[in-house]
Image (cartoon, rainbow, N blue to C red; front, top):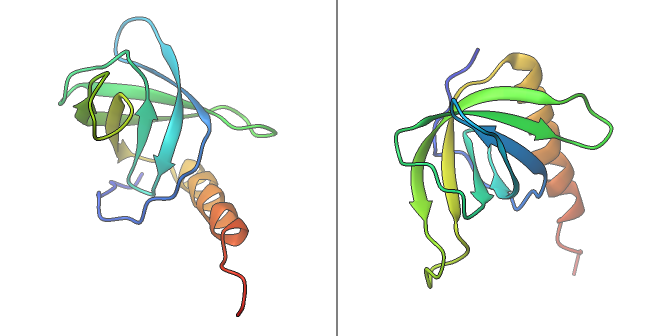
Amino acid sequence: MESMVQNDKRAPVRIQIEYGSGGPFFSAQSLNLSRGGVFLQTEFLLPPGRAVQLIFNIPAKPRLSLLGRVVWTRGPGDPRGPAGIGIQFETVAPEVLRVIEELLQNHNRTNVPAPS
């Protein structure tokens, strides 16, 4: 298992992710993803510091689960952007990290600037 840090480059990867913390699970869409965390667009906010389980629902892949911690929230109506929660990954199994890296690589390949 690897511990992640926030300094990783983020990419606007959009996937459905279920999240919960000892109660009901909610479903949200990611707005950005990195090796170290994810921002989920949602109005079902969990408080900073809360441990959270994430289940990634990626088409044509098995469901992937990992643990993280809410590091910040943005409420509805905030002028800085959509409501949601920033989650830092705490431990990521190597097979889950490979899928995250694949998602990031696929995004980078589809967003390469055209040659001039």
